[in-house]
Image 1 (tube, rainbow, N blue to C red):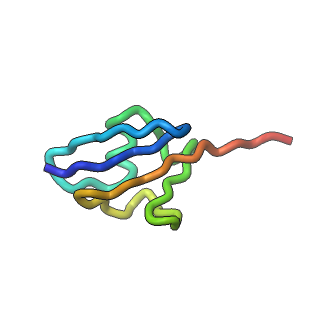
Image 2: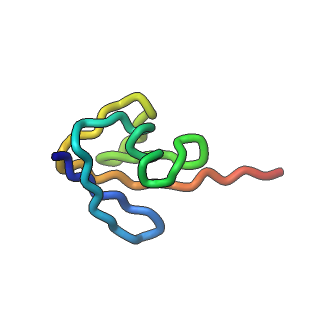
Image 3: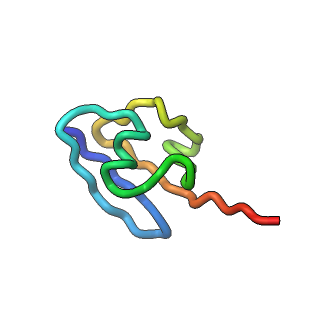
Length: 67
């Protein structure tokens, strides 16, 4: 069991997964997309193909575009 804390808009949610997942898989399962959110772990942006580990705390930042 993998436990990951997800922070989005100053709200923390503990999410549990059956096994280690890549960022993209994990976000898809909780209803977010790596196309519309940046993922920050330990102060550094991570890519969608990096694995999440038990105890990770990730922060989601919505991507804003416009012109």
